[in-house]
Length: 241
Ligand SMILES: [Zn+2]
Image 1 (cartoon, rainbow, N blue to C red):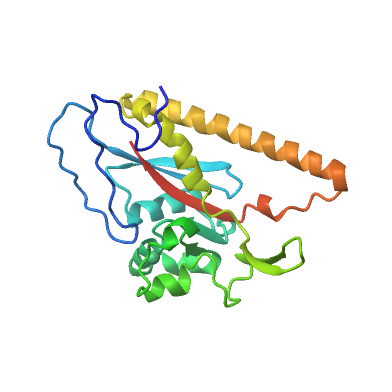
Image 2: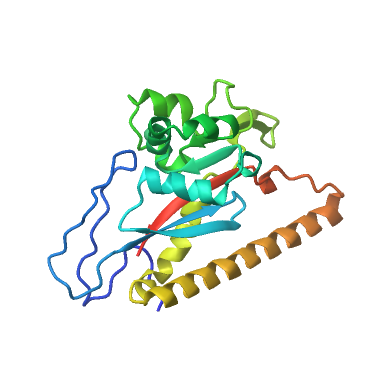
């Protein structure tokens, strides 16, 4: 049965609401008052391209932490050549902070920038200099021409637009959230198989849709140049089960 995020069946206890700000460290243990439903153990992290193609996923025990995220990124992008120019994470500033402290930033900074997705950026502290200076997904001072582009409306007036969809993983999470009640009750093996199969078929659909729209575009104007299909930006996000 599909269940939308935040929805619960009458016999289920009220869900623990997540009031944790994304730019603050997460408490390691969340205590339960009863054991009638399985506790949250896994936090599933996904990496996807702005077009929606899922690149990788991983399970973290209990909660995501900046260290876990950095290890996951290093395992998916082991070489400098493989690393994307921008990596969009809801808590990018915390991850960058940890990366600077543990020394991994020395290699990451050569190839990549960590930015916060536009949805979560508005909830980050305006006093956080590191966040504002380095993790802004749409700086309007001309410092990141690859992130913000100038386009024209139908009257010819110029306006700024984000060059990439920085919320691809959030959109994926919203879709995955519909399967949460099923996934939470599965054994580890079934969970892994089911999630992997779903993400595989989801990616096939996304690629199919892209091919269809680019062939339609190609036949209508013969120009298949589309900045939205550029995968130089990756988006990481978490979903708890
Ligand atoms: Zn921040």
